[in-house]
Image 1 (tube, helix red, strand yellow):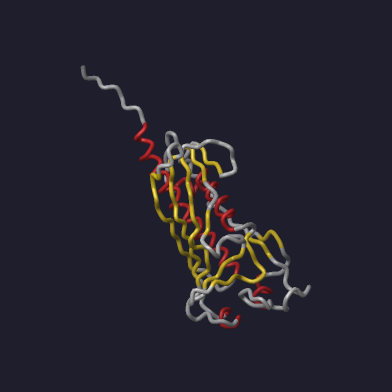
Image 2 (cartoon, rainbow, N blue to C red):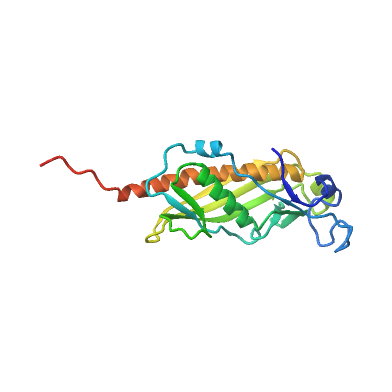
Length: 241
């Protein structure tokens, strides 16, 4: 899997050389011009064929869906690539960020994944002025690289620690737009161990975990919409007289 960098010129090795985690001092001190250039990373949704295989079938009747803007718990609202240490302290990878605020990154991949599944007549984001039958509301509860107890305070101890586990958790509500009824509430959760204690491996792990979580979102949302839509289908006329 290739990692797409959209800004910056320094390699991941340079990031490790100046400290695996971000601190106020940085690897060259404050705002000195010699500080490594920041790099931005993007994540890609699963290919359409993979997304569709999660829940095969024709589009659901009355299945227009809007994905509301994703909310995030404190610490996950920005574009920083978040790290959680064993003592519950939040940190971030040095000189690196997502290509946009994390909720927007999740929004874009959720819309693409739901569309690619082929299970909905249409799927739109929150900015599209189209009326939908159902709304998917998500709250991003986890999107972190979790390090174990051996990752201490110093950059040396973190660099020598075992690879992190990348965790993604989405709390989801499927809402019938007409009357605001919640037709389903579920949690999509996925974890992926990083292949190595490197930023590039962490990005790969984030992408894998997010794809797995969104696959659960497709299945759960499609099931909820199908069950609810059946309540409004016109019954066949009786042949009895």
